Every structure is written in structure tokens, then in C-alpha cells.
Length: 138
Image (cartoon, rainbow, N blue to C red; front, side, top):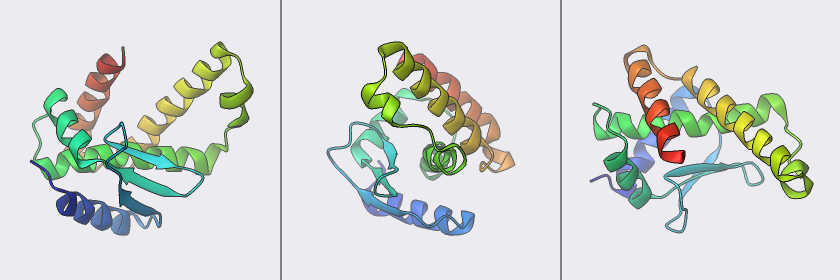
């Protein structure tokens, strides 16, 4: 079982190592393991969701490395926003197909940008997590 303080230490350490300066906080209302809010520049995590996700996504990594893998993907959203500045108005005013296309593009970018941060020893697990996550979404 991963606890809040363990996850916070991992996030703090990894962000510092990556030289990414964004806030992070625990949010027990978050419906996902981790997310990045572009408006507040804050990474949020829910330790219960992380533990539940751990049960669904079977990769052979330590709990700490599993959190790192989730973190790399989440930081991928931050990097995507920094590089692409998507027109978020599409999510509010666009048609269903337009919204889905933009969300799919953002998700693909997040996985790719996140992968650029992953240490070589975790690449295979990151790719496996991406594959298994896509099956969960479907």
C-alpha cells in the first residue's frame, strides 16, 4: 500500500531531478490516480486511486517505480501544454467529434512526452503501462 507521504516524496524528488517546478498536492476527490491542472499549474494525486490503479495495471516494478511511471505520464500533460498550447475552447464549444479528437491528441502527446523522461531501465514498463491503460479506457 502506497501512502500519501511516500507518494509526495517520490513526486518531490522526481520533479526536482527533472527541474520541473510545478506545485503538487493530494486530492482525495480526484477520480484519477494523478492529473495536471493547466490553470493552476498543479499536479494532483489521489493515493487511493493510485493503489487501485496498481491493482489494475500489472507491471513488474516496485511501488515507488510504479508511482514514477504514473508521474512521467502526468508530467507529459504539462510538457504537452508547454509545447503546443492547444485551443482549450474546443473542449467547451466544439462538437463531440472535435472534442474527442483534441482529447485523443493530448493523451497521445502526454504519453510521448512522458516517455522522453523515463529512465532506460523503466521504458519497457512504461510502454506496457501505456498499452494496459489503453485497454482500460476502452
